[in-house]
Amino acid sequence: MKPIRLLLLDDHILFREGLRRLLISEPDFETVAECGTPAEALAALSRAAVDLVLLDFDLEDDTGTRFIAAALAAGYRGKILMVTAGMSPLDVSVSRKLGISGIFLKHNPPKLLLEAIRAVARGDTWMDPKMAAPARGGDVAKPGTVPLTPREQQVLRCVFEGFTNKEMAYELGVSQSSVKATLQHLFDKMGVRTRGQLVRIAIERSLETAKS
Image (cartoon, rainbow, N blue to C red; front, side, top):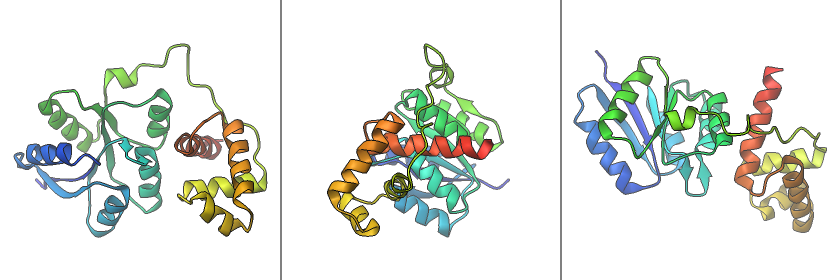
């Protein structure tokens, strides 16, 4: 049988090294790449065939959901297993809508991770009970239902692409103060406080629109 080809994306080098040592001892696994940033992982996916990505959610200044969206846009069609310390209900919801195959919490035993990888590789899902349980008080409210103006849509696109305020101002031909004002309007409309939250809400909104 062909080995399961894995890509590791985690910004903590000690955890990544420990995970590599665990996987290398298993004859049915082949670690194709070990990456510390989404850019490195996307480049690796373009060079080699990967069956399964082991993905941390918190990636320093980035998030796992943003990487997933970029990987899918680049043509990746393999499986994704989140290996993380934890995620909010909203992040879990967005990640599942993006098509992840499961969430494994890092505090679990290493042998259980091997079991999770094999389960996901054969087409099953693996969801830690703590992540599968619904949030108290019902589902997460659906922010972002207020229509956006053309300028707000432009700024949102720039945020999604990782532009700074200065770069947005140059791209759109407006002042940085105008960009800041539009960002604040977006935060208010989407019900968020940070750019990372804004990106996650935008992804969820686009998925809901695609389904309708």
